Image (cartoon, rainbow over all chains, first blue to last red; front, side):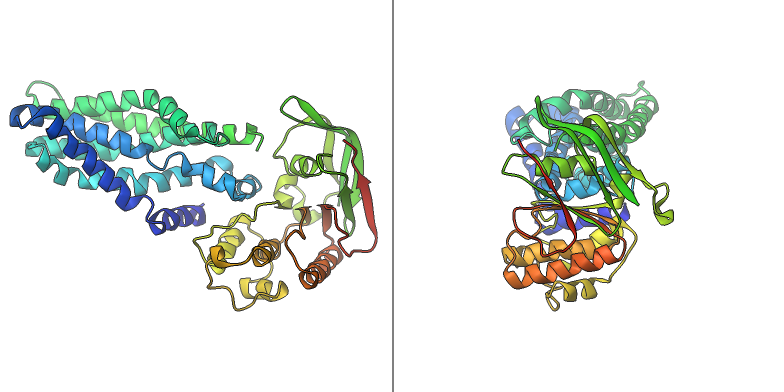
Length: 219
Length: 202
């Protein structure tokens, strides 16, 4: 399982694939926002948390359709099905690798991008915290979706349509927590903990669902 | 150890490809599956590996080797399919080391396995830079780096020159002497004696 995690990491970093591209994409989404809304600082900082979250959501879709497709195309997926390691553990490792190359860089870059949106310190700290605990859920939901669309030649679009609605609860509570951090009476902790709970829930159920799907798929 | 299939049927989508097929193959034996294109050779191998569900019938290990008493059939199998299961961006050694760690039960080390397929010295070359025949031989080396008793070989010699085919035949003989089982789907003679032929008709 560790071998699989290492290989996925070195593949996605090596191909110039994810790491840097994800950040550039994230930058593009976040920078597009001020152009769309206009240079109203007040408004920008109000929607800042939401923008960072939308960017993270879209960035997590990048490379998601390759999670199992690359392995299916070169025959590696067959070998994974024959491995002594439980398939769900393998999926967990792959989803973790996906998070380390998308969710984690996005989280770490959030404070920098918050500058573009003239967000207050409280707001970007809250954004970073919610992204850190929330983005794993996106990768684990994505793993189940990627397993479903693995045999479809152009599954990328369908995958996005399948995965985005499932990610909405994470988005709602993530943005809710950021807003609560800057609006006085609202408590930050309950929505934040809900986001964390969603991540744990999907970390448990996502790999199982994906593994079941891969076993049932007639490759 | 013995693998016995009794009246198995396998379907792809709606079409039943294999129907009422029975065979028995024991350690030290090679079963060569023949038949024209579309007869279901690959489908049979994929069903044995567990990639495709059986519609009916039973497929079981009888008289298992004590070393592998509780291991399910799919974890006893190496499947060499039409694709080589290697990442082009990684070196030969990285690829093989990965599969060795991943499949467990290490057998030959990487350099030794490469010598057996006649490609020693290429361990640091990215897999994507190799020729078709060399790639196939690296995929064959994967069978050697971790030991699994059952080899499911789907057109194993495709892309190999005559000399490499001879090398591969020698490797298969050694595997059979090590109490291995080989089930191979092929159009070409494998260069093994004492094989049983299983002819599929569409």
